[in-house]
Image (spheres, rainbow, N blue to C red):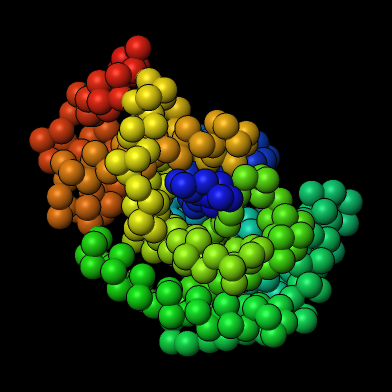
Length: 386
């Protein structure tokens, strides 16, 4: 996602710290026993697994639930926990299979249905998401969160009934009406060119299909709930308002490329990529001017510690978003100067669970020194927090 009309844009919804519905799942199940007669070791592993989920540690959670399932392979709560862990690791296909198995073992696990529906939605399977929540509401008819989310999805599905779809081997572009048909055709060409360029830079060409939806401005705001400054978004699908796009096709191309970058980065490194790097790479691949951004930050003598920019920017106001995106591009550009052709290796390390602070060390960089250099280059009055 990104700021509309700003020289440096956007956002990501991609993977990352625990979202609200996940926190609710943990609160409900973290302390649940594996079964009434569970072996004590399985119960301990169950508790350890949910504690790891609460700490957003997908690797530790996955190990705990895997060991517990070796002891009790048909335990629904343990199977559900393994699904949550896989989700935190970015293994959505595995997560879906585990959640489905948990529901087969115990259809009353509404929390498993909740996560399964959200994964389906993020993977572009809106009809499956709706069916999953409809089934869950048969078990929990008074669940307000499920009811509200289902209403939102049904409204979105109704809006799509009048949409057409243009498909090629890699992209599926949905659009509303003949005016947007030309934009849909342009989008497939722009996305195709950008896909190979970005893939070459990161050394990977994801094989998954990528969905794109072109909206009116009102449809985009109503369906995504994006902040006013956002010019687009990616939450498993690329979502883009097309206001004035025919009069400014260069901006349309830039926004498309930005969101495509998020889609490719998610496929390559589904977790552990800090938002500042995710956004900075998207802006870099979209052709935003890093030198101009650095001059702007230097003129204002602004530097925000990167730790503050690790998570989603969606709650920022327009002025704050401007700074966050500007610094993301600036910091990413400096990092790319340091890692050179090693960007793909860096992304692989991040996806394996190595924190960015450690992942950069293979390139002879210490993170405190990197941040100190960033602050120095923009003449910030204070040094970043170490």
